[in-house]
Length: 322
Image (cartoon, rainbow, N blue to C red; front, side, top):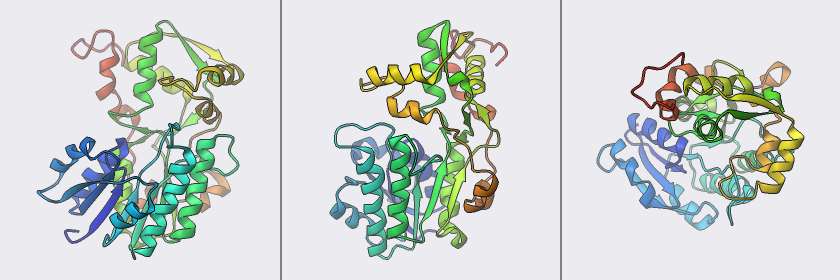
């Protein structure tokens, strides 16, 4: 792959840094495109001298985007947000930005485009996040029909925003912890390294062109099961209290706009919908990890290695029943 040049939008993020590491290991030359290059220079030692270049770009600027996909053999778009902030709205980033990258890649004659979406992308969803992801996929397909679309479930790893967030909340709230909707929502957590492998394999495989893949881990858990697992690993013993979604909606509607709140009103809507790979008749429309040659990693194999920091006794005490 030494002569292959790939432009990676959003390469300094949680998933992006693992994608860059994987592509560098496979020998690609990489343009890492970010808003703040100073925050991404840590990526350069992941490759040989000159293999990884860090460049500045606003994904909403079509001229900048076009310049940074020029002469690239492949493009990977990982840019996404979990909550709007200022001019960074769901539509601006997930729809307009995704369409801009796809259109620029098509105009530049790029051979392969991998676009990262999310399980739950649905034009009819109640969540603005999920609707914008679906609209972004549509823009990508219209501009670059051969694009490969990957939809991961919740992604876990040392810097994740799921296991770390709820472990931190358990440490903060103490003895009582809310179990939204009774904890019945289903999740299929996927390891960030497996997502990176899926991206690399999709770039190499001609058979992945024009296809959509949903990426989920080997086990499906309820929200309640995941929270109980986090409690065991972090050696916490909170009392889990079922909270109806209506009460969650009310609290996030009143306070979800505040900076730093753990759950927004839009994310509360997402918690109502199972976050798992499609099954039944719908499964015929999407591929999975197996189709990309990736064996997914179990939560239990990775999560304890970084949640120790939330234990009351720290990392050096002997774990009790984790």
